[in-house]
Image 1 (cartoon, rainbow, N blue to C red):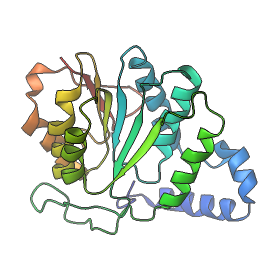
Image 2 (cartoon, rainbow, N blue to C red; image 1 turned 45 degrees about the vertical axis):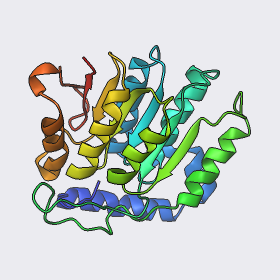
Image 3 (cartoon, helix red, strand yellow; image 1 turned 180 degrees about the vertical axis):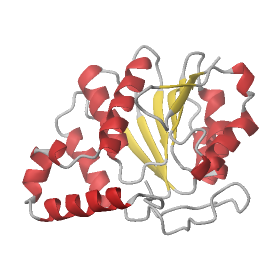
Image 4 (tube, one colour; image 1 turned 30 degrees about the horizontal axis):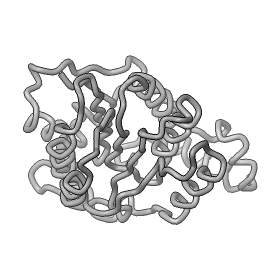
Length: 241
């Protein structure tokens, strides 16, 4: 969320929340996260849980394009460890520059964004979290969550070429931008079985229209059943026909 267009009430909410967080010790934040969670965060968590359940019987990786700080990525890892602890062929891959926006398209993407947005990322903390969970999960010798750093326009096709074993059960597109979304669709769709799930985090959203434009440039919308959850306005998804 860029917070480019929030209301005065929302601004007050976030200022109050920030002050509340500042007065609490780190352990308190970790032990009681729902005291500080926003409606957007809870909505995102719920939709991702529902999406994960939809691919539990489909073998293959979960690929998230657009990781940011890794909250959703780690939720997918936790769900996999909880609901399918011995699914050794379920790898969660996170693709991101981890340095902010890249490959901004002058025509398809918003004019009021820049490369510094979403660059406030502590990759070391994310890597440590993955390693920490490896200490207690079953079959820890087989990696379950891996980060792929770099511009998805380049990293996605290179990754597919280097991994002939790759099968993708769920593809999550959350780059917000036209070119990375298009590259991810073109790279990973051929690796998806029938019934696999493609998720778009800002589908039909005018403030980041590039994501939907990329979808329409790669896929005939008349040949897929694009759906959403009634409680999550921004996320759309479809099963691979």
